[in-house]
Length: 189
Image (cartoon, rainbow, N blue to C red; front, side, top):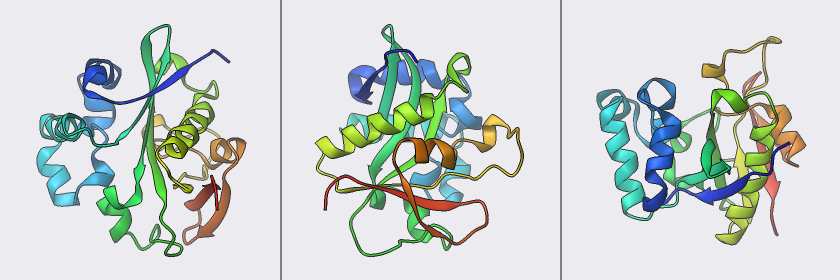
């Protein structure tokens, strides 16, 4: 495994984020706004509108996630911030809160094609744990998929795989759907 550096997305790293996500905004114009907006808003803004919405959050110094750097190049992304920042999580039956404890959420990943299937998701999760800890989080939560087949298309892996979460020390705390567990890492009690 390479030696990556994990840094929060800030105004001065926006160009790196933009380059990593490319013209299409990672997954079809998402720009990591899927969990942050209502479905109707997300669809209206898909593409350039979502890019502007994410940039506005970054310009307001909102905590949105971390970038993985290798040799000064951003090669991976992990969305990590307080759960209440993600509107869709709050409205989801499958991913509704497990309890009333305040948690931070890891909602998605994006990894440069050259670095996929090399364990970077697990390493990004470890970086997210450190980042959340520095921000005062006590519990980090994720919503990975349990693959239904040996080979799952990258477009369906954006929330991560449960195996990567397990390798990073997360444990399943709830499952309301066959292939969508809620997993937690307790930073401190």
